[in-house]
Image 1 (tube, rainbow, N blue to C red):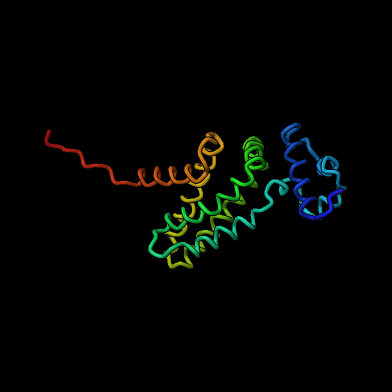
Image 2: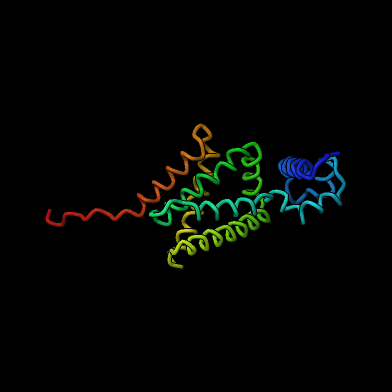
Length: 194
């Protein structure tokens, strides 16, 4: 039996991830997750409200870290630069948890109920980042656009990191934001005299 709440949460998360990979999310019950973790089902519900949330633990901490990093970013940066600073620091959380993060993303990708939850969590994170940008006096429309664009770019970089683990997440983030700047660069004016 786990001796601490943190240990129980970790064991429940690992058990859930293993069962979702083996049997699928829909065919796994909270009782089975608890049994695999060596914990009773009542304890499961003390830690998680449902079997989806077990894969989204830490979302509040990530949101708080991102909001704080947006607030702490150096002055003089454009909104996407501020977000890049925040994502680079918060990305360390994913890197530290890669053994869990990688299979977690794969389970979410193939499970509609989890993709829906992931989208809802992403929307909440995006809104929190937009609000943090507005607190830095970024106009509301630009803050919203930057937060949505930045979050999509972060997801793109995270998937590239999963696909190519030879490079750290930070390198993929820098590449994704550089690519975003390339996409936004004005097209060269064609010479119409020839």
